[in-house]
Image (cartoon, rainbow, N blue to C red; front, top):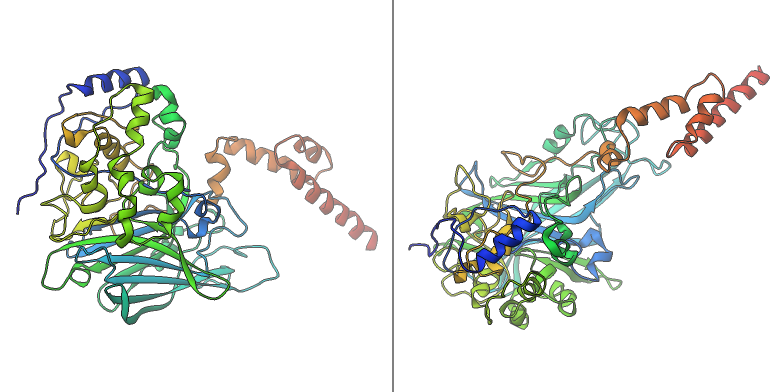
Length: 506
């Protein structure tokens, strides 16, 4: 079977001439891409729907699925939750919710119904409830007595038929979660803690849960009337310095594909939250990125988060008559492709024929991966658009630039309107790991304020040094003019009062 996707040149013509003029004026980076013949595009889901944006612990942000580059007989699924984790956000930091089921779903025959579900449920363990501290000293291991708050999880495999659970298997019990990265003083070797949270299952699979750098890279100022209305707001990775809670699972590919049949699987994640009656209700869903963020209008967003792929026909018009090309035409005068957009139906609902479309597919929104396509040694960020069939939209790798690919396809790349649209953010701010769980280490809390540009390290240290001086009140008074010194002043004053009282007592 030959994939219907081929690499083309980088020449610009027709509508692309208008695009290039706009790019030159606004400074939007050219991607130098290629071609294709049906199928592709999308991005991610941070704070995408009205209800879920108020409960970030349950909010899926991204799903990735790819054939493992260092173990090509396995498939890795990465799903993330809790968008925009400010690294210094203590004292509680960012636990997984205890009243939730975090699920990874697999449809291995294309009927829009889950055949396998990997379910993660979490528990929180607190050693000392009389302190406000997340950790009471330097943490050197996950079983360190100074790690005051530790989470663990259970992992179950549910096997289903026609949407009904037929069998449950407990795959792992009380596995420790990698904690939030409090800072260098608290966790000087965070990588060691992260490595200890990688758990090997008896069937050769691996699992991980814990904090990670947000692997999604983009300029989110697209929402400011599409990059400022003149393409001036591009080139900054909005998610740089923010973390997420990540679940990663690496399993033998033959465990998740339909036995003896085709190698294509559909993958998505959901969150179910326990209600007052003790029942679980689905509150978040994510497969192909950016669908609920940009494709679905506000009236459908909460409905989509509560829905199942088998019911996705109700959202078909959002794909065939998308809003985004019309906005681009209104702002930049680039003509939107003619509707209905059947080219986008392959992207969001079916998969690319000859590449990652199951033989008897029921249209539904899933991230579809052909597990028989081996990983490439040199991944191309535009994936299939640039002739790399191991990448997006054939699954999604951490390095895939889904924003650029999506913009180009939405503007008619598959219909012959070649273009180089993109947001000028071509890679993540941190390098990804070469081995499981592949996600980059989270930014530590000790870098939180400095990442926002509030002052140099020396400036902050000088303020603290003055405030904590013990040779009288001068340093304390001077420090009170600095940012955040009020608390230091009170502490320092209390220490001097204690010393004076101690001298009188003796």
